[in-house]
Length: 239
Image 1 (spheres, one colour):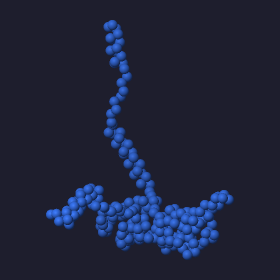
Image 2 (cartoon, helix red, strand yellow):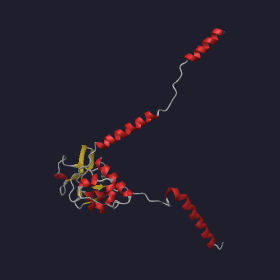
Image 3 (cartoon, helix red, strand yellow):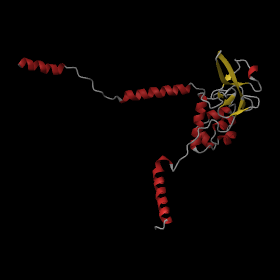
Image 4 (cartoon, helix red, strand yellow):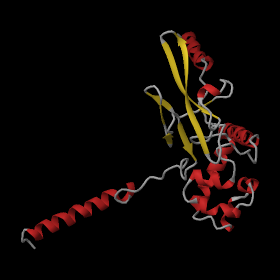
């Protein structure tokens, strides 16, 4: 019996025990630093001053398409480089207010560096802020015909443009056989559509508060119901 008790006691000491799950703050911080480091490295690889694109060739057009009234500040940026290199503090000194407008401009500058354009940003043939779109038909099989919207040089018909010159226009579709539909697409007299630089066409629309927003909505609606009941009692002659 004594030997059995000794063996059971030894078994307790020799039993493998699981390592306790202990959070290591340093390890988590290292993972976070590694993630932030990769993000910073990715941003550092982006061009500080991106090249203009055919649809947005200058400062005024850039500020026009992103909207929020920034077009009025176009004269404050002497060059394209200045638009993309001025700091937030320098933008404040130029009078670009309120702060949310500066933050909005800085966000769109970063998007432009990353090649994240709005409608028309992928177009190649643009003249005086206007691009022409045509319907290009491709016969995949005798029974299957694909229609897609392409950007072509101004004034040219689809038959006059080689497939290598055509540029696929994203965000536009073909309705029926010849009608091009999409944001800011206006039909042309002899077929196709035209898209023109328009103020706010890339703008991120701000939401509007309904009854004071989420935080005050319940309070405002309660007070409104109280006022409506009071007005109803007064109309019925109860004071």
